[in-house]
Image (cartoon, rainbow, N blue to C red; front, side, top):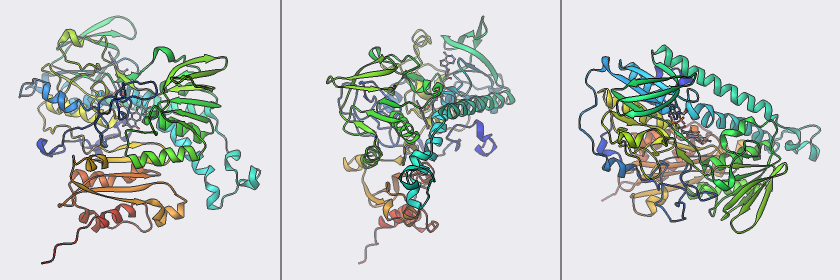
Length: 559
Ligand SMILES: Cc1cc2nc3c(=O)[nH]c(=O)nc-3n(C[C@H](O)[C@H](O)[C@H](O)COP(=O)(O)OP(=O)(O)OC[C@H]3O[C@@H](n4cnc5c(N)ncnc54)[C@H](O)[C@@H]3O)c2cc1C
């Protein structure tokens, strides 16, 4: 199925589905550090931090913000050379989990002619649609508008009746969080329903219930409406996702001490929210609530926020957060969080106390693999509980595949979806290329956003990649000046000698949209000259990408 044939509502963020056609050997190895300590010393958060839970340094990471075990796992898995099945029409595919890792795989398997059953415990679309990506980005959409409005007085807007003679836009605009959250929940439900309808149209059998693996070819389902059912599987895909890490001394109560899944039941804006964890999830929510009007305290165990990101980019966000009035507590580790009347008390490991009306715990995720029957079925998991897979999503057992957050390869919806598709292409004998993490584009939805792709500057500076770097602050860009954009930059990395674009960073409003030309350049190994020779609109922020490419041009040697 080509991406254009898909209902855009039902496709995962990565809609460029398909065999990438690149040689497997050309794909560089994943290089991320495995687990990220944040806030309370938890392991891997969405963007793993730069140290493990004990604070030990891990290798620098690139845009591919995943688990450094991935390549090791690929090497460890003893696997057969041929695909699991030969007769697709009579092949029974069972998928555990209806998030993007699962439902995108089901669509591919159905398209290829297999008989497919998806078993889903909570709701189609998974955490991605119901509690994580869709809700958070919908909330952030409102926060973005708030931020734009409150910063618009520089452009000449005035708000009659507001303080400061109409220049204090913050006092003129308020948010109805009940309404925002009801919109968030409605959108999530609608998208889940779209996915259900799409799967049904494709002839996929849907079972509401919890699946457990009895054997590599047998799954038991405890049906949501009672009873059990046993399924036979020629191909089994595990796509069970992950859930927020909870800490014994900071147990969420769903009212004041919250995981990110519980935020959407709030009916009133938190007066003062303490966010524990300054990885991607913590930073995105801290940014959003600050923009919506909460007083925000961000507790970060590291020197600055977003320690897993490009250092310059993270510094921009750190500076912006502080400038906007957020309290950023660096090198601070939360020891415990308890209810105190109508508020919360966060005690740091050095004894300091922080009070707030609410606390958001954003200290990492753990895979949904416990009690799934994996050990009994001989399916190998890592110490962290992730399913060990190779780059075509095979587990240690023939015919059993895994995709998404339960593998810990790279906790992004786009990667989960691609792993799921790759699993089915491989299992059902279609053309397939191994997963390439180097070309994954990722984004942090703060204001400004941080979008990244390819190798990192840290890797270039450490000599891991031979490259040149150019960085252009957006402050010099004509469009940025017109729009009142003061923070941000574009950075471009090219291979020394060949001039091939190997990576880049964009820090700007809507960086998630601007990074695409860089992703194309990295994917198709364009040179900086090829990028520079393409027209960009004048004036435009993307003009800075072309300008960065021009600056990396190396004049030909003259005899
Ligand atoms: C706050 C937040 C924001 C994020 N924002 C982004 C973003 O902007 N972009 C991005 O790319 N990524 C984002 N991510 C990461 C993204 O959410 C995950 O990488 C993605 O959800 C992984 O998809 P999945 O299919 O592996 O798992 P999920 O979407 O979690 O789906 C797994 C499903 O399996 C089901 N399940 C579990 N066990 C069983 C069982 N035994 N039987 C049956 N069903 C079972 C669960 O109910 C769940 O529905 C975000 C994460 C968080 C926490």
